[in-house]
Length: 316
Image (cartoon, rainbow, N blue to C red; front, side, top):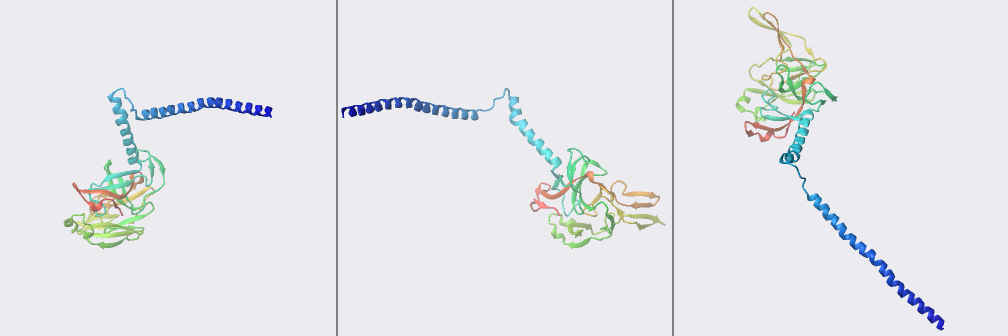
C-alpha cells in the first residue's frame, strides 16, 4: 500500500513540475506574436505615408511639365487623332444644303464610315470597308478650290448609275424621283421672308427621303447634259444622252438646288465647244476626296443666338 502511495506522489510531483516549464516555454511565442503586431501596424502606417507623399520635382519647369504639359498634351493628341480618323465636326458655311442643314449648324461627321485613312492623308487607306450610298450627306474637299475648302453635299449618283437632270429633277437610271410638296412652315429656323420665295419638296429615291427646295423663279442649271447653241441670235438647247458615272466616282448636289455650287459648276462642267456653242455637263467627285458621312447636327447658332430646336438633330 505504501509503495502505491509513494508512486502516486511521485507522479503528481512530476506533473506539477512539468506544467510550469511548459508555461515558461509558451511565453516567448506569445510575446513574439504580440511583438509582430506593432511591426505590422508600423508597416501599414509607413504604407499610408508613402501614398500620401507627393512627387518631388527638381524645378518649377519640371513640375509644369510633369503635372500639366505632358498629361494635357497626351489628351490633346488622342483627341486630335480621334477627330482625324474617327469622328469630326464641321461648321456649315453656306445655305447650299438648306432646308436640311442651315448656315451656322455644326454637323457631326463619321470619318470612319467608309474606312480608315492614314492621318493627314486623303488617298492612303489603312483599311476600306464601305462606299457612299445614294442619299448620303457627305463632307468633301472642293475640287476646284483646293483642300482648304470643305463642302457638305448630297450623294445623288454612285458608280455605274446613269444620271441626267430635267427641269431640276435628278433622273437616276431613267427613273424620276418622287417629289411631294411641303409647306414652308415646316422649317421655322429659316428666314420666313426668304422661305416664301422658295418651293419645298420631299424627294424620295430608293426609299430614302430628304428635303429639297427650288427658287420659285428660274434657277441655275436645271438641265444637264445639254448642248446649248446660239442660232440667229436665239438660244437653242439640245438634250444629250444621260451620263454614266465612272468607277470610284460620285455625283454630289446640294439640296438647295438653285443655290448650290456643286457637280454642275466645277472646273469644266460648262465647256466651250465652238463659238456660240456650250456643252453643259456634270463633274464627278473622287471617293478619296470624300471625308465622311454627316449624320447629325450637334448644335446650331444663328449668329450668337442658339437654335435650340436643332440641337442633337438627326440628319435625313
